[in-house]
Image (cartoon, rainbow, N blue to C red):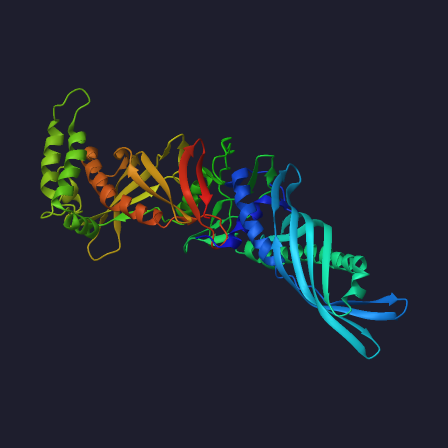
Amino acid sequence: MARPHCAVVVLLLLAVVSGLEEGASNPGFVARITRKGLEYARQYGVAILKKELSTIELPDFSGSIKVSWIKIMSYEFYRLKIHDFELRNSDLRLCPRQGVRASLSNNYVSVSGNWKIKKAFISFDGTFDMKVDDICISAFLNLGKDQSGRLTASMAHCNNSIGHISIDISGKLSWILNLFHERIENKFKNILEQKICEMVGKATTSRLEPYLQTLPVISMIDQVASIDYSLIGAPQVTSQVLDTPFKGEFFGQNGHSRAPFDAPPIRLPEKHDYMVYFAISEYVFNTASWVYHQAGYMNFTIQNQHMQNLTRLASKPSAEKWRERYLGSTCLTSNSALLTTSCISSSLLLLLQISPDSPIHLHTSSFPVLVPQLARMYPNMELELEMSPESAPLLMFTPGNVTLMPVIDVQAFALKPNSSDRKPLFQLRVTTSISATINVSSDRIVGSVTPGSKLKLELKHSNINFIDVELMEVILNYYALHTIYPSLNAKLEEGFPLPLPVDTYLNSSELQVHENFLLLVANLDY
């Protein structure tokens, strides 16, 4: 269950942000609060304010009164205590170009305490009860940022009024004080009016601002990357919604260099069925791709031991499923279902090699069909394949789909025994399409990828004569399916956090893929 003070996560986005630099670039992340979210804030905000106002410590006060036959007597009211504070009518209203106005009206408070009157060495005391009706409070909140980019909160304006006060004084000589009840009631009124706005301001700085400090500005993802959630401009307020723009940009731990592309514009739908809407631009994901590519974390090296371990771990059913999926499609000609001669020989070899009992060996003597002259040119040598994207693969968001089409360079080497020397053999260009699935797990965005098409190879350069590119496709597709994709998915399962303050929870969440951005719609826990 959400903590009651979690309402300030809504108030965070409902207030005017002042002193923020206006950014010219599009945001990578936009948070929207709707009128339904405003209602959530109102309910919890009232609960918080009621609790705060009920703890007001009213000061003792004293004075003097002049009674004709007794002359001047001093009085004192002390041990003042609030018994009940009813917030009857409350409202939070979006004010375009101004922010949000919080107002409470027709409220009620009851106070009790002790009184004492004194004349020379004679004193009398008693108790009193007071009822205060039609208390009205109106306040605007201001949010800004400090030098570190964190949010600050202050009360921009507050006023209140009290409609009626009635006091019931009991005890000996209470009739004397009752003669001056209007003066006493006005003094109570002035004290309450001062204390109410003082308490609203205190609650803003002592509770709201520290909570806002838990909103992440920089979130570390791992040893490679962090994400920047600093605000890039003031929220845009309309009569229906409030949109707050965040940078939403990954950057490397060794420096905050700018990605070589800009965030596309985000056009949020006009539906307002949920409390909060989070628009996550494809820019966020693509800056992550760019950072990890720059750091070399998208490079793969396939060595002999990798292939042996891989095929030993493969189960027979999965190997059969893979052979049916990739070998079958590879061996079909474009015009008929007949198998080509070269593909038959290649497939027979691979059907033997790719099994739990016969692991693939990346060795010059293991692929007479793939490269016939390898064993003669480089006898008794292991092979090594280096795979690296030509550039950072960029995700493309279209309605209902998330895809990417990486282009990968594959360089093959022959390793000399007992030496670090490597002989370059050939270079391939690999293209494919990948489908991505994105989900929300708790307060994190997570994902997974699946092949949209098999790897397609093209020979770029060769230092040897003949290479069976089709057979190399089979090998690389097998490795990608069983090693590269699982490795990527393990990383994508870690995800990255949403910019939420501590103890804030989402429910009824739903993800939608739109043009250029992912839309997360959700409610907040009651």
